[in-house]
Image (cartoon, rainbow, N blue to C red; front, side, top):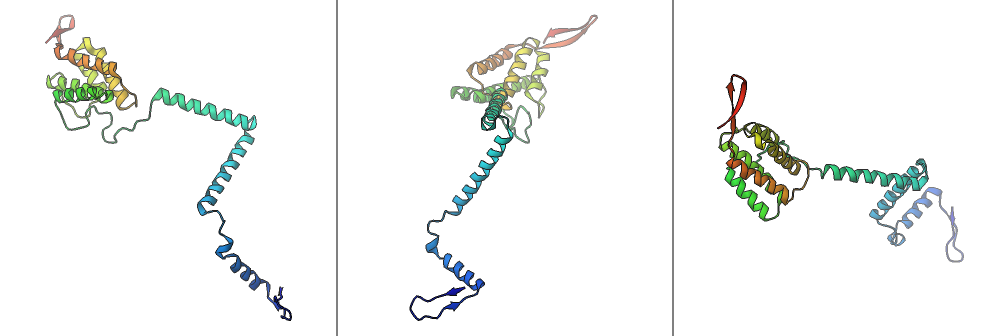
Length: 225
């Protein structure tokens, strides 16, 4: 490479290819040449959107109907996801150590659970109100010795056991346990009517007399306690 000076009479200077390239690189590395260059973030975003565009183009090519067909498939998938979300409810993560246990805190009396349920109901917090009222029911049955206190018992188990002593309320107990499970583990939302049904059951059970199985010549009969 030959470089000629800018004034008359200057002697041409021969520069080999490698030093010339290095000199050009040094010149181009000066900040004045990069003032309008995109930032690192902008370059990263440009590459990302290029990748997304390429992915979308490849998918539309492989889908019958091209882009229109791909859009239709996406809409159908979103509709299916929405339907499943509506049917199954919002995913709800349960405590790792609590499982499906009815009680997840330090032991409290039935009266304390009822008071907590009333506070939640007054605030319109129906999920918590249902939970506390169901706990009040089970704790009350334990206090009356109709149920044996047992750590880790689920609402369904408590309802099944209590239903054997209070058969006339067995269906309502199962329904209350199902409501408890829906709002606690199923991601469902309770409303005031749901809470009032559990509250009415709690009141009815306080006055209910259990029945016990007694032997007879014909088998077993139920006798009020």
